[in-house]
Image (cartoon, rainbow, N blue to C red; front, side, top):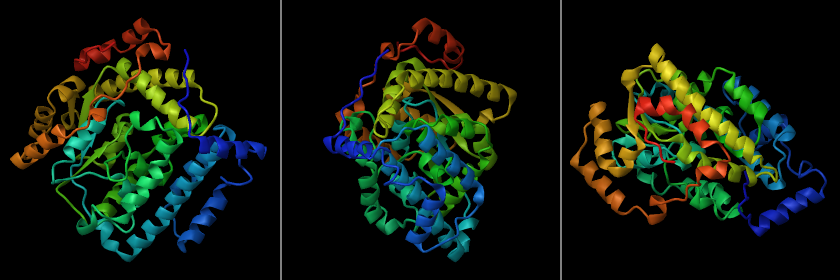
Length: 414
């Protein structure tokens, strides 16, 4: 098994060389000490109430893992520090805004539509299609990154935070110029709930970006209901000045947290596309490896592949177990096939609306047709790596997923 890192921009190599020449990879320049970053957030915002204290333990675990395990370059330290500090400033501003507008927490969140599934199973495509319904409130990247003040309809498409979020997120495209072919991210586009979970400092986002096994162990062994409660609070904030008929949310992360999701959103309506895991494991492993390569010179590709392959099999086996036991409500989970979604997107969306008794309007249908007609070629055919790139044994892995494929009618793609 081999993995060839994509080229990094020359300025990144020069910056990382500067950190290496200091002898400490930038530790003396960029602090990842929790108390230092907390103090900096207070100084930046002029505020001092971070809200509930639950976030402090995962924050501490994450920062310690960055120092002891992630082997960060100077670029990696800069990215980690800037994001953590922005999130802490956000928390301060969120508490301040809610204290001055107590009605925010009285906002109701009713029957959100939640798209989840294994990565590369069409969740992003489906989420963006659902965003075409004017009745759907789909969280955009910019408002998740900069939620205060809450957005308003008049400036929802022109808010200067759109450009600010885009500049921040698109630095990944500049670090690794090949990254846009792996994943499209932009300030104005819908994105995953991991950006909301990050405000509680327990998010799969960082597990993808950094090699932090102790942090993964912590998030896998603790009750994560607090991240969903804070998630709900953020949705209340975001809709307080710009509300629509329903929230439409998306994240593969929800898949392994469905019992927790339903405990906080008991009326949630889940949409679950299914696809052959062996078709996408190479593509996802390359994406994760590239994200880590932006932040470190050390990428254990073999471990990424092995962890991902195990995780896919475990998640789907556990999902079936939870459904069979009645731990999660089967009536609130709609199973779809990726093959059907890409073959006939509009019929698939109609099926979702019919199943959950949502009005499917002709105006929405027209928007869907226009969206699909305008879809750029790069979006239609992104490169997906061959299964052979993973070094896994096809027969062994196929056997691990046989029960899942039979249950949900998932065709093999490799």
